[in-house]
Every structure is written in C-alpha cells, then in structure tokens.
Image 1 (cartoon, rainbow, N blue to C red):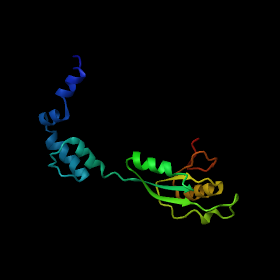
Image 2: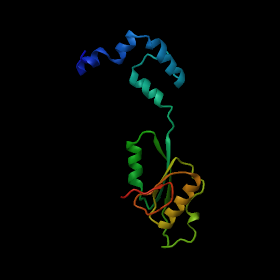
Image 3: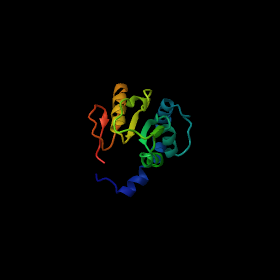
Image 4: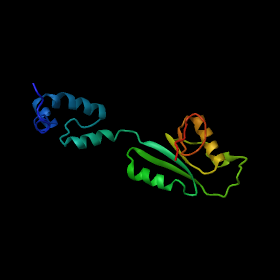
Length: 158
C-alpha cells in the first residue's frame, strides 16, 4: 500500500488527531507530566507544553577571560544567539603587562566554577596559567588561535 502524499499525511495523522483517536491522552500525557512535574490536566497547545518541559534543562555556565575588551563581540553574540548558555562571569585584565610575567597566578582566580571557559587573553603567560588552573579543575577551555598543548584545551584556528 503506497504512503499518502505529505499534505494528506499531515492533515490526517496530526498530533491532535492521534490524541483524539487513541488513549494517549489518558496514558502517555499523565506519565510525561509526572516525570516533568507538570499539571497532567494541561490543555494548552503542544509547543507551549514542550517549552514548559524544557525549562527544567540546566543552563550551561561560561566564564570569559579577556584583555582590553578582546572578547566583547563574542560575549554579545552568545547573549543574542544562544539558548541554554549564560555568561556567568567576565574577567577583564586591562593592566599594562610586561612581555614576561614571573607570577601570572595573581591575575587568574583559582576559584573557577564553570562548565566552560573562553580564553580571549592576549598574553601567552596568562593563557598558559588559565589552562593549567582549568586542567586541575577539569574544566574545558576554548582558546582560539593559541598554541597551548594541554589536555582539555581546545585551540581552533582563527
């Protein structure tokens, strides 16, 4: 038996049609509702049902390290175009730094608590220190265009 044409399929076998013709409304919806802690007597349309269910998803927390505003464009793009991602903290280092830092640990906090770290630091000593701190904590780092070879650091070309 050939399958019906696409427009016919959508009309005849839509979600609402299936729910009316089957016992899904009485069995499946209450089970899903109890799992997601949603009112089983939900009468709205299904897109809003899906939105309500997705609110339980944990937000991905990002920390951004930058020098002199070098990550502002990326931070703005994350805020405008992403869902489920929040830039939790921005650490800006705007001081004039010498070419060689003897103790870069005074610039990088040790209490990093994020799901992902973005490295827009221009100074190589700061980037290396950030990568080592994040490796200790098991936090992945994205450092575009850097030549850091530490496990957990992703260095895509720019």
